[in-house]
Image (cartoon, rainbow, N blue to C red; front, top):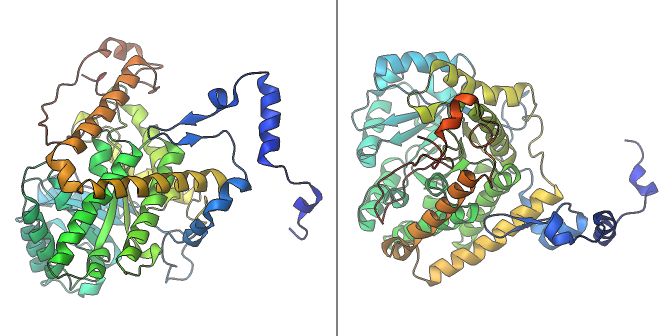
Length: 470
């Protein structure tokens, strides 16, 4: 545009917009009619203006800092990897599925592994330097033994250690919500992992797991504040044991599940990167925000067993939120995963979501498309503001281990879960295909209970439609 045409128009203030809205409402209350709130009490206004962004200009410093600039000429500026996770335990069959996925649009792998996983067979003919590899230890697996098995396999390969990209999806603190244990044991394991994997500069030894709180039914603020509180607990324990904070920060990736609250999820992901960087600064650690690895996966909490094909729509919007929010690696879970082992069709559909958003929706053409959005920036700021206050309160109350031990953490998540599930059951929250626009074959399933045994200290994965699904 040769001339800025906006100069020909007088700017309209926010008060002017509100005044016009009040005229159209014809006496109805502006707040009650047009302003909504998130589960965490953050108000969402019907419109935002530049006036809403003046108090948090510091967020501008994080705009367009999502991934490093591509080193290869011709690549699009926005990069994220498309992850495939083979639902197969046999290494030969798994290898076949992996090669097929890599030939059809995937460029990263997520493997559920144990100390006895046969990497040589499972990853046969896979050119590891050209992909990202993420390893998730199985529930009963020792993460240190998993790492030792990995290092043992890698030493037999032809590749240099700097060519190994990815991370170990293990958060010892959050794992205590699934498998009971002692804090000191998790700290010892984390310390050993940092030492044993330090030779791999592009492979994260630790994970900060937000996902566990989301999948158990927690709100945006709950998953952020509890995850960061857990990280502070681990960080303080490790630094007290003699490790440098910089080593911990630079070897930790962020793992988030992405739900169906489109703009809130975008803001959540952006807030997680910003707060992680801000936290590093408090420990006198300097990070490049674009080098923080953010691993996102579509949510199982939002998925329904009723009319499972509607989960494809949820996967798509969740993937869009992840990309616009700034993920560096994206795993779109198969839409029928909630029914059991995913089919070949659902695996292919999941794989193609990321490809379509990149090749047909062009989400890779701009580094940070939502940068400067009055709404998203405002929502990100509101989340960060509440997050700082909540984390500070948790630390004053004794930290993560204290609220874990007295079960107040678990109780707050379970209360939120119950409220959200009841809203779906009562129809206050619309879930297409589950409680609205149901097919005739699904109508009779309403009202059944999802009975799950859960100890006071535990948080198990759940579903928003848990009170509807059989």
